[in-house]
Every structure is written in structure tokens, then in C-alpha cells.
Length: 145
Image (cartoon, rainbow, N blue to C red; front, side, top):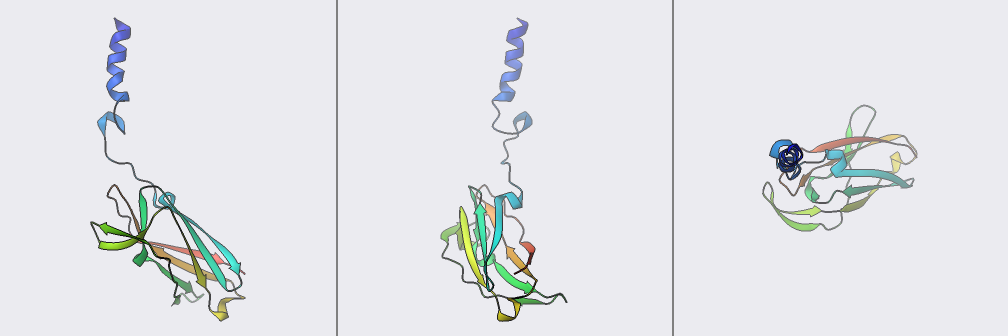
């Protein structure tokens, strides 16, 4: 009888969808796990940024920003052509273009930065399909030719 009682007590906990004691709220990834990226210096004047976007997460096309940061803290916006995204109706921003799964973009550097050590500032924002939008993110990367 004791064995049967133990099985009945533990069965409901094992059947819960997620979390302890029936917490069925979605579990969200840390922003850096949801939108992992790395850079590659393709040439002295070209940097590529490669994103791996977790399943059921997406990045907004219109929330990207790229700039060079000077040693004095000044920023210089860089014009970057992003590839076409997928159409998406977002509860927060309406009809937008987004990226799922992966994204690679190439950044053409200005002539004066090609032989120097510099900092590349990347701004982006994304969401989870389950309803969480992350705040805008800013990353500052040291780049050396």
C-alpha cells in the first residue's frame, strides 16, 4: 500500500508541463542565448556579423543600428544594407519585417578605420513568439585589423 501511495503522490508533479507545482508559464532564454552572434573580419574594410536566432524567437529588421565609436566617445553611424526579412504581424509594433533562425550582414568600414583598432557598436531588438519582447540591446565590440 505504501508503494501505491508514493506513485500517486509523485505522478501529478511529473505530469506538469513545466516548472514546479504546475507553473505552466513559458520559460524564456537569456537574451544572449536567444540572439547569439559573432563577428568576422572579412577584409581590412569589411566586417560581417553572424546571428544564430533560437527557434521561436525573432529579431526586428528596423531595430538594428551599427556605428563606430571613437576613443573620445563620439559615434559615427554606419549605413548597413540588411537582407529582406519575413513579414510578421507583431502585437507591439504592428506589421514589421523580422529575421528567424539566422542572419548575416556585412558592414563596409570607412577608409579611415581600416588600419586602426576601433569599437563597433551594434544595436538590435527581438522577441519570443510566446510573448516576451526584450528591451533594445547594445553591444560594443573591439575590432582590430
